[in-house]
Length: 147
Image (cartoon, rainbow, N blue to C red; front, side, top):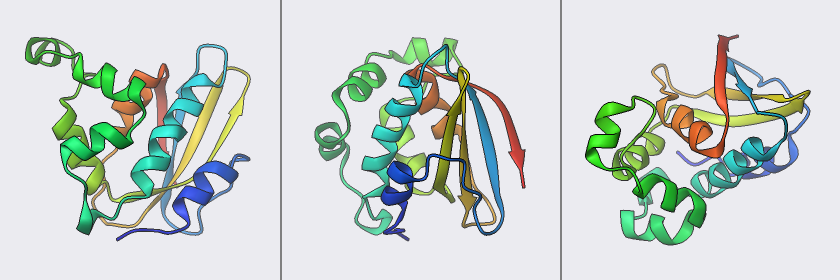
């Protein structure tokens, strides 16, 4: 299921708007500026434009995702991934984002940290791929709260 408004919300909902139903808030330490939020939003904007039923190939993803993200992700060796639980293999990350079970609703940056409000649209959802995206974007998840 593709939510046509998700890209609009990623770009414009930056005041911590609450989703209308079940969701969760992810809190992120941003190391002093908004760059990790901006980088996360940049990747999420591309992901949100894709229909899971017409999901691009890994090669197509390499072309449409921001170069910094592709370069960072593909730099990890199998050994790196096995040693560091924060790292993901590119194809596995794509598979997880395809059926993540949530939509981006809004975000908010303040005083060196930011939050993302996510709307759950499936009973089972996963934020592991988002955790990785935030990590390579330069942030660190400090809390997750369901509401």
